[in-house]
Structure formats: C-alpha cells, structure tokens
Image (cartoon, rainbow, N blue to C red; front, side):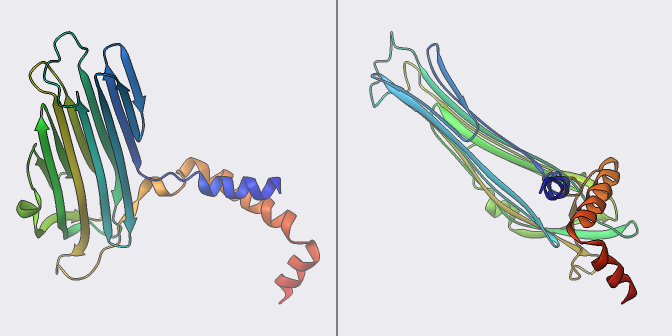
Length: 242
C-alpha cells in the first residue's frame, strides 16, 4: 500500500495553473482575511467579499471563469460620523505557463466571451488578461467588455511556450457620505487555438500539469517498485514469454 501511495503521489505531484484567491473585510481594528470569502458585522454595518475562479485547459481550448464581489454597508444610515468605516475587497490572480508543440509557425487564438464589471457608491471592479505577447485586454470599472471582445481571431506564434494571466478585483467601502460601497467583476472567457488556416485545432498543454524533469527519475523509480511489488515474479516471466 505504501508503494501504491508513493506511485500515485508522484503522479499527483503535477500541479495545475496557479490560482490565488484573496478577500479582506474590515471595520475599524477588526480585519478578517480569507481565501474564498470573508465577512464582518456589527451594530453599525457590515462588509463581505467573495472570490471564485476556475481555469481549465482541454484539447485546444483554455476556459476561464472568475467572480469577485465586495460590499460594505451601514444599512442606509448616512450619519456615519463617529463610526468606524467598513471596507471589503476581493481579488483573483491566475497564472499558467502554456505551450504548443511542433515547429515554430503562425497560428491563431480565437477569443470569445468577456467580462462584466460594476460599481455602487464608493466601490468598483475591474478585470484583465494576457496571452503571452499576442494579446491583452483590460476591462475597467462599470463596463461590459463582451461587446468589445465578441469572438475574434488573433495571430499567435505556435510551437512555443507562453504565459497566460488573468487578474480580477472588486472593492467597496463606506465613508461619511456613502453608506454603501459595492464592487463586482464577472468573467467568462474561452481561448481556442488553431493552425494558420483558422480551422485545424492546435492542442494546448499546461507545463505545470506534468512532472518537472527533475522528478522523472523518482517517477520511474516509483513505477518500477510499484510493478515489482504488485505483480508476482511468475506473472512477469510468463508475460515476457507470451
């Protein structure tokens, strides 16, 4: 059983893209930190934030979905003088080292979807992404970036590696003149890779989803020990004769 765990432990050591989620909620000296969510509340108001994200590389597509939201409120009471303000913030940061195989050549990445950001009172949200040096986009506060993105082909160099990034943030806070601070950013994007004809799919690989080169000797050792202890010698000899 220990050998089995070693073998599968080495396989599962492959890491996916780096996804960092963070939230901060505060009122006066009371600050609460969280990965996916946070919240603070007292008799004068409240603050809450949420951060969610998924990143999937499958065949010739990269799919990103992310939501950040932050709300701070004093319950409609504008007379906040003398009270500690409330604040909330949420962020998403995605980084992935991707590559396509084959000779260096011209190709295309088709981008579809986009981002929606909003604000209320003293708050807001924004979103941005980059696909290596081929393209980048920034969606400012209170914007709908679906219309500007649409679905389009963008030239990209295939047969090379590149870094994909996606960042998103939202914040909100109260002050003596604003009893509500609200921010939102919502992203749903798909990046599809094609050869120069714009039709033939090109498979995309996440370099962090396979064991690092330095781990291959350990991987091979774990596999050898796993086979040796799992299958009896007679079975292995018989298999070779066949």
